[in-house]
Amino acid sequence: MSTTTTSDTVPADRPPIDPYPLSPYVAWAGNRNRDPILSVFKEIFPERGNVLELASGAGNHINYFAPHFSALSFQPSDYDADVFATIEQKRAEAGNGNVADPVRIDLTDPATWPDPKNRLYDAIFVVNLFQVAPVAIADGIAQVAARVLTKDGFLAIYGPFKVDGRYTTSSNESFDKEILAANVAEWGLKDVKDLEKAAAVHGIALKKILDLPANNFILVFGRA
Picture 1 (cartoon, rainbow, N blue to C red):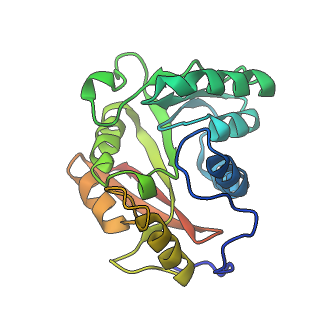
Picture 2 (tube, helix red, strand yellow):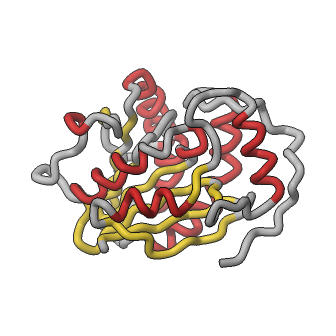
């Protein structure tokens, strides 16, 4: 696996780290990474079917991706229903008829997870969650994937990660130190191995690791 060669300096226009879905930082990060993610999704998404986004936040990504896949139906979700109005507003602004009304999914609460009798998904994706969420969330994500992915469906998780306990770049190490300095429990870069172990318990296996710009990865999982 190769690593990226982007600059290790913090961009001058980057707002202070703030994981709140409607924050300037989240909007900045989404604008920065959406095109590289879209390029990968154009290669791996099916021609038609259903796609679920977990932890949609403000809906920046799902509403940016949807117009590029007119034959796919996109389902946004989040644990915080307060962001639903923003998701719907962005959907209206983009004219996205293939984006459904957002639904509440709390990855720590199985009672909120989607019912496979209602719909199966050809793809599930998660963007920039784990640096500000406990690694235990991987268990919920894997269980949702095991529950509602089609036989050949996949789960794509985007973000910065450690690999075998090591930082892949000095910029990721600096980013992790900046996150940890906030002294919020469970914040910080997670290791790919930890996500892989959590997924394996539920029959979900890591299939490939894709390098993306800004020292991030897309981890692609599927049924074992």
